[in-house]
Amino acid sequence: MTTDILFAQPQHGARPLIAEFSSRHPLFAGAALCLLILMAPTLFAMAIEQRTFLGINVWMKPLKFELALTAYLATLAWFAGWLPRAVADAWWHRVFSGIVVLAITLEMIWIAGAAAFGVASHFNDSSSAMIGIYGLMGALAVLLTSATLVYGIIILRDRASRLDPAFRLSVGIGLIATFILTVAFAGYMSTTDSHFVGGNQSDAEGLALMGWARDGGDLRVAHFFATHAMHFIPAFGFVVSRLLEPHLAGRAVLGFAGLFVGWTGYTFVEALSGRPFLAMLY
Image: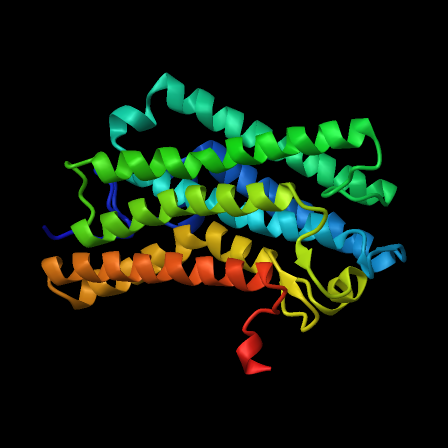
């Protein structure tokens, strides 16, 4: 099988990047673009805003989520081009996609609103209303993440795919791993009072935005790797599908996926132990 594993679609070849994203999944691509544009006013708010929460600007969390969800939606939009045409055109797929975008919209409204009012968007148990909202946001997070599970299963089951077999395997595994690991780690974090384990939470927030503080463990590290399994594993699959014979490439993908899941689990256990990320290097 000879295919262009990045542009493999039955209806057209390569085209300008933005147009390609839009053609693969207009809704996801459009939502990603809206989030990207939304970063401009968020950055402006950060520039003029003096308020902080736990040592960082109140608009930092909305900015991080805008960036993360832009990458998430853009990736799903690209991967949608590898769905079987019957699935891509199905009514249930359009409805499901709309629900995913709605869930993301509600998440961003809450996170931005919490920033505007200077309150915690996560781990907020200050009132029964806040506890209820936090629970609802958790349910929406599972819902929006479920797109990776659905896409992963469909792509793996598509025996008629024009994708290189090893690369298709890496995409499917990466998507499914993203859902399982993210829900598992985020679900655990939702039962705690903070994503920090040990140390001084306020100091750690001020020192690290992605878990590099040297004071205690940070569960966000494992969460980061979990949410990006849909990038790391397919990227590896892309490389080995070009360098190795098909049977060797498939085995390499399986091996790397196992190592990646193991690594992600290690960072989770390390954080639970109250140890900073890569503590052995300090």
